[in-house]
Length: 222
Image 1 (spheres, one colour):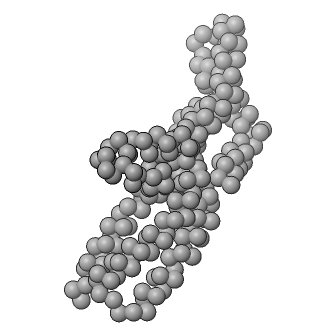
Image 2 (tube, one colour; image 1 turned 90 degrees about the vertical axis):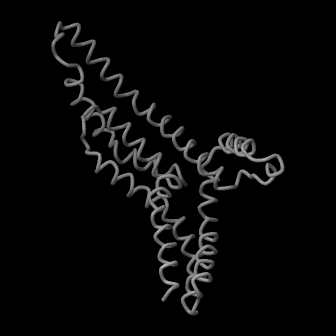
Image 3 (cartoon, helix red, strand yellow; image 1 turned 30 degrees about the vertical axis):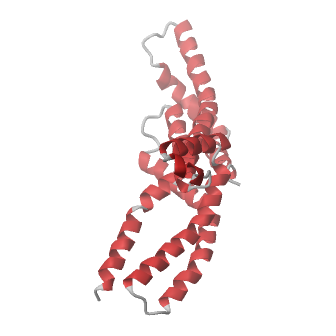
């Protein structure tokens, strides 16, 4: 009985890190940023609502990360099944959980390495070595999670901003054309953003923007 509180504390501590891991170690960052930029480019205010944008980003993240989650389960399930069949002490239970976590980290490490830019990995590897003692600098590798996590996030943000720039251009052109037309007609009091909004929505619908956008975001991780 005295072993149960220790195990529960470890499990609760691990569960409290799930939101952080979801944001920092998955495709959620890039997808959420791109969708937010598209909403701002449309200029439709809070449409679609933030909850819808976040929900769509979460669904697409689950879609992208499903193969990685399958690999994690295949690595962790045998260790957890073996531990359930034994009567373990709290120390042995925590040890088994740590080992399962180490096994689960390998597919995630491969995912981060694949999608983190080499330049960002090299930069954070160099920064990590500079912050270490001289004797411990050789132990830092570009495959460490302390290097891969920030390198992955900065790479994702860089790609998200690049995609957002390309998506913003057509809508910006529409705003400029509408603004020039209104000025040439002498309609100075009418807001160009109000007039251009229907044209931007029409353009987005005609090109089937949501399908192209979601397809491009998902295929970017293949």
